[in-house]
Each structure stands twice: as structure tokens, then as C-alpha cells.
Amino acid sequence: MEERIKLANNLKVLRFSCMKCGRCCKDEKTFVNITFQDILRLHTGLKYSLEDIMEVIGFYTFTDVNVKEFMNHMVYSPLHTEKGLAYIGLLKKKNYRCTFLDQEDNCTIYPHRPTICRTFPFTYLLSDNGKSITKTIGYTRKGIEYCPGIKKTASIIKKKKISELLVKSLAEIVADAKMIETWNRMVKKKQITPKAGKYIASILLMERKLKEEYSS
Image (cartoon, rainbow, N blue to C red; front, side, top):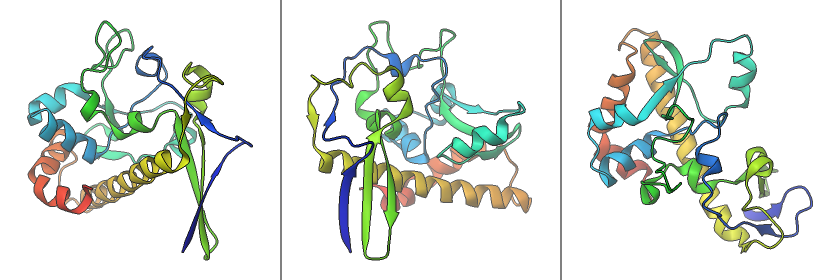
């Protein structure tokens, strides 16, 4: 099947140069979702134990009146926990800084950072008409809002390179959704108790199998 790559909003080229300002890592309203693959990267790349992982991730629940509207905008899937449906993400410090951002605004786990951090500030949509697949690449709303790395003088990013990264990211999100769907189904059938820590432990126990299925 033929694949096409096009740019959104009449963009002629993609431009981006990371300014290392840390804005995306300390924005009050930015939520850094993580997948089970991101958790495995912390475990295998940084030798993090279950206890270490539980100290740097959070299970975020949302109970306000707009929770359904919020969930409709989320790409990642919520997990059944002892506190209800929750999204897994990196913890923030009291000043909204990512737990892995140092005082000089450097990421302390850069080689093992979550996939969502690797793709920022880009996003895309896939459309399939049965004969060809079109990948439409553009900037995220957050990126346009506050990322100074998107500017006319920034480096030109190759469409193919960012497309490959986004395809890998989407594959991880889909695999993560299936993992969570299985967990949630087992919770509803009362086959397991909905404990956040138990979910993370199950990922670590299945590390070898998961790596074989989803690692590239």
C-alpha cells in the first residue's frame, strides 16, 4: 500500500531547534503520559526497581465536571486503580517541574525519556482510503503555544525522520492501550484487584515477553 507524508496547515517545511529552555518540562498544565514501554526503559536503562519507579510516576485521577470532555482529548488510556480510573504520568515537583528536570533545566534521563517527550512538539494524523495511507504531520497545540524552538530560523526537520518517530510512538500507544484494556477487563471480572502498584509489578514480571513483542 502506498504511503504519503504531508504537512498540516499548509506548512511548507517543519522547523524546530530545541532551545533547552525546559518550558515543556515545567508547564503547570502539561501532563507527561507514559506507556508500559516507557516504564520498561526506566527499569532496564536506569536499573530502576519497582520501588524506584513508584517514586517517580503518578496515577492521576480527574473528578471535576469536565472529566468526560478531558478524557475525550486524551490519546492514552486510563487504568483502573484503587482510586478509580487514572492516567499514568511522570510526577511533578511542587513548582510543576518534572521530577527529572535538574536546576539547570537539563533532563537527567534524556536517553531514556518517555516517547511523548521524544516526539514533542510534533504530532500527526493517519488517514486510510484503502489504497494509500496518508500521514499528516504538524505541531502540537502546546508546541505552538509556548515552544520557542518553533521559529523561522530553526533547523529544517526531515519529514521522513519525524514520521518514523511518530509511527513508532503510535505503535507504543496502541500496544499500551491493549495492555490496559486487558487489565481493566480483568478488574471488571474481579480476576485481579485494581492496585496501581500491582499493575506496574505485572509489567516488570512480563519484561522479557513484552520486550520481544514491542521493542524495535
